[in-house]
Length: 266
Image (cartoon, rainbow, N blue to C red):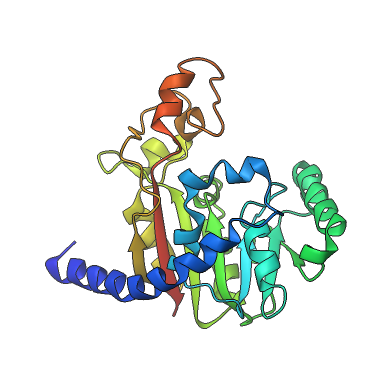
């Protein structure tokens, strides 16, 4: 990066951080809600949800689309009840058109039906990574995605996915992306199968598809992650793909090092 570019990035982050600090306490209170599952709560120290959501600038009146909330619903159980009265939470999930995702999708739908006092106003749309509408065009204030970009890149689905996000967002709407941060001493091709994404590659890809980077946060950084694990990011918690082999070692490292990026629709 040039000094000018670094300065612009720092300025953008400084501007956003004022709003970030004001909103963190709001989301911290939401983390105490009784609807949150124990399996999700235990991940809070690794995922920093209050700081992440505040950094993305999400407000109670916003229409927020989460891409692939899954059956676990980590962010869904924080956002959907909060947005229920003034805003709109949209779950853009893999649907019945993709057979391998049917069990996960049905589990999510069952949860929404079982707790109407929290989720009766959730809108469910299909995300197919093929420019299929995830929300009415120009209706979303924010689109968020957590640890999905690496899959779309590997499957050559990233461009169509980004186009769908762009179409759904209002002018100036926000795209929030979190993913496993790759090594800079290797090409993206060298580490694609490991689940890691070079931050510079991610930024270039997203900016080439109608977005402008406005903020970067290190809230989800983990300097302990050496990014050279036998089973890639899935070696680390919560996956523990190697099961009990060196489990204590990987537990001590924690979840992966992640970049947290905020873009606006151009």
